[in-house]
Length: 368
Image (tube, rainbow, N blue to C red):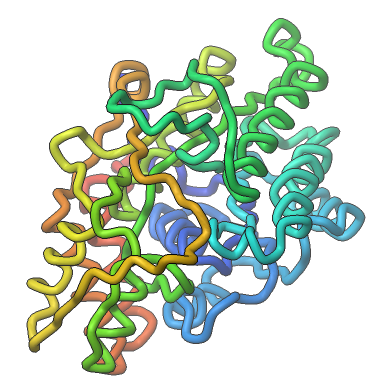
């Protein structure tokens, strides 16, 4: 059975997205709108300027609320007024290096914020499923050559990774305490979590992220400095991660408690690249004398050098597989940013996002 994102399923669904002003959240809201969903977003204002949210005018295609996930009272008001059928929780402090500067805020947002979202979900009679988005970095990283599976221990050596491991534990505790699978007939809600790799795509301008750093440097005619050229990450285009989230959410709604657990959504092994290899691809796609050099700083805070994800469970049970090659994903990212630099309008930028993710078959409603 296929759970791929289609208008047949999502059209008319009431979907609440936290973090819709962020890079992934803006893309996700755009995709849901294209699929015909009725979307409500709850988030802080965009962290960067420019941003995908502003460039694609996401506020015009959803019910837009500015708010902090640490403000439980306000968030409850929005949840209860909107009456979502599906909640997708993306709001977070998402940066490893920043977490060294603001560790307490990172834990507050990523752990207490997650608990607040789950608390806001309690008592919603409209709710069928909630998917809590975390990260590949929630695993205890031993820097070994094997890919991490959903059954591997959680952990984290930096504040960000540890906070995401904690948020997974919070999700599990809320599921077992308030949405137990054995009592599904009583509450009717499935709680799952999704762990993707290092995503990239058009509209990401975050600080200390590899592809945004490349785009900024290449646009300015400057050389990119690589701090960890030999690091291996599960790089993937944002479209593949988001189709994973939507596939999981649909499975939770249609099939119920068998999907109430954590899920990995990472790239295939043959697409694993070092930082330098990915930057080389980006420079080649950009052209115009784009260049880089390796310059690892001696005083940089520690980051994992090797991290791999095993997405076999999603492939077997959800029939989910990445669709974009690294070359295609980088090409799409460069095309989006060059269109933005050429003052493309919001509709054009949204179309670039949706065409990279959804086929015409997926976005077309079948005749009654």
